[in-house]
Image (cartoon, rainbow, N blue to C red):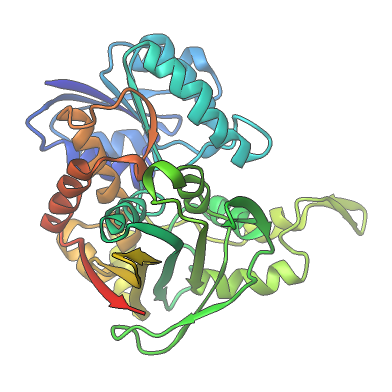
Length: 406
């Protein structure tokens, strides 16, 4: 039996804690955050949980909390990623996170390259594994993309499509961290084109898709996300030499943020307004409500009524099989907001990202991740992919794949 430390008890960390509380391979779950109230609320729901306060800005504070841990799950804001990685290396613990840290390098893409190089070497030297990018996107969607490769001899292009179709009647543009969401909206996107990572303009290069389970055609646009970087850097070894990888995004959050971006209201550059210097981004963020995470809050939102309760996660790949051009397309089906709340008291975002992330935690605790060093969720082997998708199906997170000759 193993000891887990979960740093950060927001939507992702708390969901993983609840999921792993029932795992027979877990003896203790330390839940740590700077917000002691949030920690205490979570621990009350657990049988194996204990609370701790941590200052994520201090590597020493992190080390004190994670000492003796077998696995550290990093659910903290991305800026603290380097501190947690360094602390795990010092106490010799396995590591897991949900998305790429911004703290390794000023350019987060270069930071991922450093993770694959320097941190992969350092974790391998101590016989431990750091498993990164393990939420829903990146995470689940990367496993789905990896699974599609079994249908190809060579791959040309991969599209990762995500449509956030859950919309409440109240003003609530984002169901996860607003600051993370808005920073992503404001940033140049990254795509892998002709074998190279390039920058693209946010909200550009629209692509339309019509899926049977959605009421209308959806227009997806460029968005700053991890998948093109991971799949692009791992193209030769894990993705049949893929030349092009895109992440395309759509939904209420995109529709909310696009005019703000065009108006310059997502800028971090301070400007003078009257006698005060302000960053437009900070003013906008001030007026965006936090994502709901408590039971009564989610219940109230649902009872007020929803504008829509839909969504889509699709990986679309093109390439060659037995000399013929083919298209392989995998659709992820998962509980919507109402169903997620009925099943587990969570939002659909918390359910998909948290439960999807918890399955990676389960694999780490069961010693099913046998690689040493640092790997991302798109680097699992075929047996690990099969196990993940089988366990996901038990949570009503299923994948349907269609193959079409072109």
